[in-house]
Length: 210
Picture: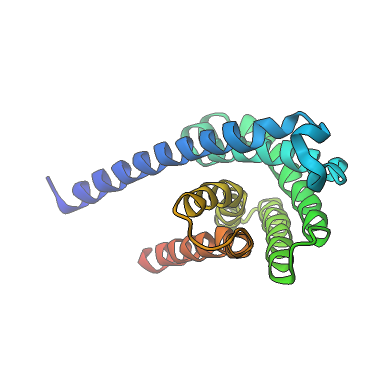
C-alpha cells in the first residue's frame, strides 16, 4: 500500500473517530443540559434563569437546532448530492446561530457573576453570530472555500456549549477550583481553545496545499 493510501486511511479513520466522539458529546449535552430546559418553568429554570426566560428559552432552542444541524452540513454526500437540502439547512443554521448569539450576549450582560465571566460569554456570542454572518456573506459572493472555513469556525463556536458543560462537569467531579473559578475558566476556554485548534487546522491545510 502506498504512503498516500496509508495517509488517506488514517485520515478517514480519524474522521470517523472524531464524528463518533462528536455525536456522543452532542447526545450528552442535549439530553443532560439542553432538553430539561425546554420546560420553561421557574421550578426547572430556577430564579437565576427564570427572570430572563424570554431570552434563555429561544437561546436554548436555537442552540439545540444549530448543534444538531451543524454536523450534517459537513458531510460531502449530502452537500454534493442534495444541494437544495444543504442550502435549506444552512439557512436554518445561520438564522439559529445569529439569533442565539444575540440572545447569548444579552444573557452574558445580565449574568451578574463577574466581569471576566460576562466578557467571556459576551465575546462568545459576538464571535458566534459574526462567524455565521461571514459564512453567509462568503457563499453569497461565491467564495466557497472561504465559506467552508467560516462554517468550521462557526460550528466550533456552536460546539462550545457542549464543551462548556462537559468539561465543567469533569472539573466539578475532580473538585478542581471553586464554582466561580470554573465558570470564569470555561467562559473563555470552551471556545477560545477549540477555535485556536480549528484555526491551526484551517491554515495548516492551506500550507500543505500546493
